[in-house]
Amino acid sequence: MRKKVIAGNWKMNMLPNETIHFIEELTPLVKDTQNEVILCVPYTDLFYALLTAQNTNIKIGAQNMHFEEEGAYTGEISGKMLKSIQVEYVILGHSERRQYFQETDEIINKKVKAAFQYELKPILCVGETLEEREAGTTEEVITKQTERALEGLSKEQVEKTIIAYEPIWAIGTGKTATKEEANNSIQAIRNKIAQNYGQTVADRVIIQYGGSIKSTNAKELFEMSDIDGGLVGGASLKADEFAKIIQYNKEG
Ligand code: 13P
Image (cartoon, rainbow, N blue to C red; front, side, top):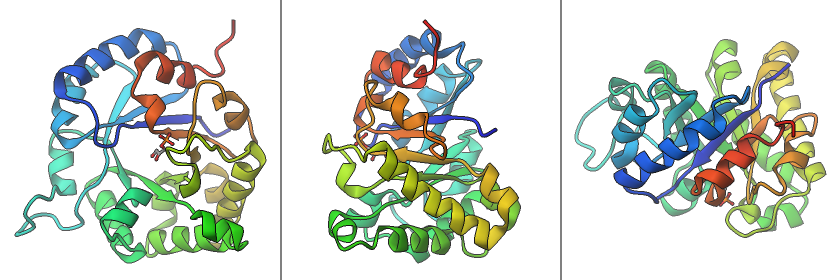
């Protein structure tokens, strides 16, 4: 059985003091969950987040990295740097990086490979635009993005990659994909992985949904057969709301 993995993506929000308070508030609310909890914070919050989350079940991730190890890339952060402060996860290929920072599948593939080189676990984002959905090309778009980002990885590496299916039209818009739409897209990605890497890898790989997840819709989404949790943007900025999403399956 696959684990449910619930990750917060803070995007460009939260200061160090807010980070410390947030994690202190979240810790007791989620300490008894069986679900995996990850918080992906801005670079400037990483160190504070890692210290505050020590000895808790909250894992810390970054939101991006460069694929080179070091060098003349002003303003960039490498996988080696993230690993050096014990960051565990890194979001790669988020649609906002693809859209505003011209990240291509090729660049994202280099980043995914670099993440494994430094023993970071990538959270790879894929997703279609509204135009692509309306043109009926969703499956083609998301399976191609997945294939290209994973090119050249071993089966073991593919199995360790967390994939986040985030339809772009559902991000920050309040429009959630229906649970069936999300599950169908995720099944298409899983089938492609089965085709390329075998059924065992496909059965084990974690594939999340992302896009306007809230405490009021998390349960119906996460209970679907192929949705292994979520990547949460806006609703991960309030500890009590994020805790409710993480605890979607808590009894009573
Ligand atoms: P929202 O949950 O704010 O729609 O953002 C989703 C997202 O982009 C997470 O990476």
